[in-house]
Structures are given as C-alpha cells and as structure tokens.
Length: 234
Image (cartoon, rainbow, N blue to C red; front, side, top):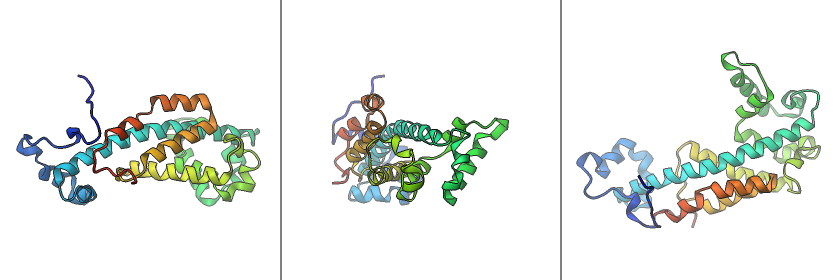
C-alpha cells in the first residue's frame, strides 16, 4: 500500500461523508470524550468532522515531532554524560557529583538507579543515564548549576553556547515533549520554531549527527500537510 499523499487543507484528515454510522463524527467524539476533543471542536468552530481531522493530524504531527526530539535527546544526554564523566574520573558522576545536585535531581537519580537495576540487572552508568528523563538534563543546564557544573565542564557539551541560551532552548523542547507525552494539542504551537530549536541543539553537539537527524526528520513535511484549522502558532 502506498503512503497517503496530502497537501495543506486536503480532505485526508476529515471523516468521509459516506462513513458508516459507527464512524459518525459525533459518535467518535463521544468515545474519545468531549472534554478531550473540546479544544479541537472549538478550533473548528463546532464542526466535529473537521475537529476529528485536526485531532488525527495533531496525533501524526506529535509522532513525527516525538521522533525528532527523541534523537536530539539521546544526542544531548550523551554529550552531557561525557562531560560529567570527565569531571568525575573516579566513579559514576551521579555519585561523585551528587553533593552538587539539588534534592529534586537526587530523587531523579535514585529512581533512575532503581529502574536500571530492576529484575536483577546489575547497575551500569549507561543504564542509569538511559533512565534519566529529558527534564533532568534540561535542569542541569539551568543557571542554578552555572558555578557548580556548567563552568567546571558541562559547558563543553555545547561549545560556545551561553548557559542562558541553552536553558531557554531546552526548556522549550521540554515543554513540547511533555505536551506530546500527555497527548495535548500541538496544532496551535509554532512547530517550525520548535523543530528549528531541536536541530540547533543537535548542531551544538555535533554537526554530522545534526545533519543525519535533519535528513530523516519528517516534521517539515507534516507541517505542509496541516489542515487550515491548525494555526501553528500564528
């Protein structure tokens, strides 16, 4: 089966008028819940069929953005992990540098170590790092760690980037990632700008890896298929 092709405003995202009764827009809206579909119905001025189309596009765009941000997250955390490791050569950085972390970060590390050793697995730094969420890494690049972590070495993960710029950019990516994780609307967000933020963070770390991410990211193509009801931050 060939993949669907669409252009902005095409009927790809709407419920066909010939749909059987079980697929009537009002029925699907009720099953998905009027509370969840409410913002989409409002964006489509009460047209439930258009709202379902917008909802489907939102889900597809979320999947594409999630894939892109996932690549950026792995690249980012590996770069930060490498610099933190260089700062603590005598043992895992999350133990050696533990006194420099705040209470919330300590709790994140504790939970990550617990998950990493489930089912009798031995603890390795790689397993613990993989269990630390995007939010953990974002806050390591916040001003509160400027003196204790950023200046001593973490800044080398993003050469030449001021901590303020890194913090704000990663915060925007975290907000988008969290919206996607909770199945929230993103059709009203500036997806092109968020995509650009993600690519910029990747370039901070490594130009070749960033080029690979950009080559395989489908966000721009999905933006081109957005229905007219998707404001995309305008």
